[in-house]
Image (cartoon, rainbow, N blue to C red; front, side, top):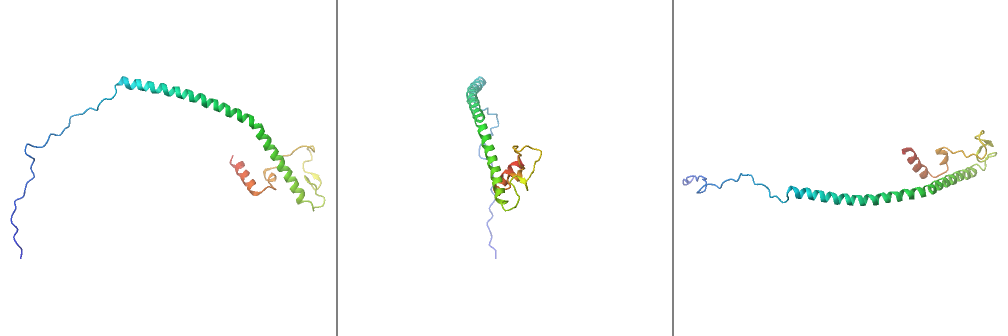
Amino acid sequence: MATAVPHVPPKQDLPPAGGYKKIPFARVPPKSYFTGFTMIGTYVAVTTVGLGIYYLTAKKVKRDEIEMRSAQNVIFPILIAERDREFLRQLRRNRDEEADLMKNVPGWEVGTWYGEPVFKTLPEDTLVTPIFKEFYAHADWKSYAKRAHIKLWS
């Protein structure tokens, strides 16, 4: 059977003797490190130093930009000449390839259509710029694809 548990009266939780401590609720102002005049003076000093450094840096950046622009102006004609030389080289490669391909065709002259000039109204020494696909007709596929991508997306 069940055994009897001795009856223990419950212990009530009461405040400590003398009561609880007071709850601090008064405003505690933060400690002031700088006065308003000190902060304004610091702002003016930092801004002045920053503007001075900016001015010196801006002069150097401007000098560098002028130098780069001068270098680009000097090298630009050389780059244009190299581009034109490569253009003429590719035209020569196209002409040589056409001559090699059509050497067994009777009556074929390079740059004509079976002996007839393609452009009848132009003088003999006029350079006719070929269309894009005609220019890369005898080039490798990688060069054509790269240039086509640049041409189409720019």
